Length: 291
Image: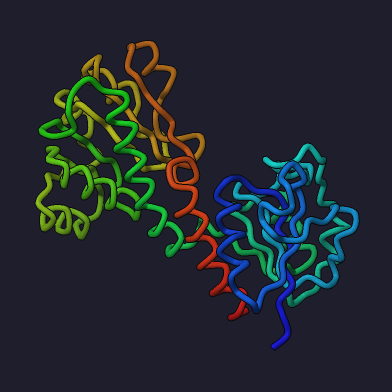
């Protein structure tokens, strides 16, 4: 079987683990762009200058988790090289190729439409999100321990949202002996929360629950933790916001109240880069052989 030709353009620590995992698959041939600060022996994979990359021969392109900005530039953690993906560059990608990114951006969506790209934002996928919810939950526990002067055990924890991340976070804090209450909106979620042995409340009633809260964990990417919600909160309470930018917390008002609020973005890559990289490698490997 012919090898599939993949180029990985930039990336962070979890991408190093992803590269190691993908390199074990003999069906894949890889080139790295934007890793020139690392010795080639570190990965054992061919490093290529961006200008020398034969785009037309690629079966897949893997972009960094943040994608690329509105000008077409991408941030390569392990390089000081400027990498700019122009409209012309995208036009050279063959129709059968797959372009992976962590998250999509307006520029990427524009390139997708112009060139009929097969664009796959990995962080939008249920499988990736569910796998990532595990290191996210562990990272949240780490932040809770580091930033409080009381035990998680017997503390009162509010988890806002009962999606893929909220469910994992709530169950892990409950397993540590916390008194967990989950804010949701769907009757089916209330039933599942109850079945898991946790308290539940409707998000419309959030302000009535924050007064007894020790740790508030938000997973909802809409500003739900507003002034009326923050006012009853204890001054020594901790807020951990796991929602994507701009988050779901009024950070400025929390600061005025003297409440410690953390916007914890990208926890899997920070606390468990090996696991996060292996998750990405496994999903990408499945997808490139089915497209």
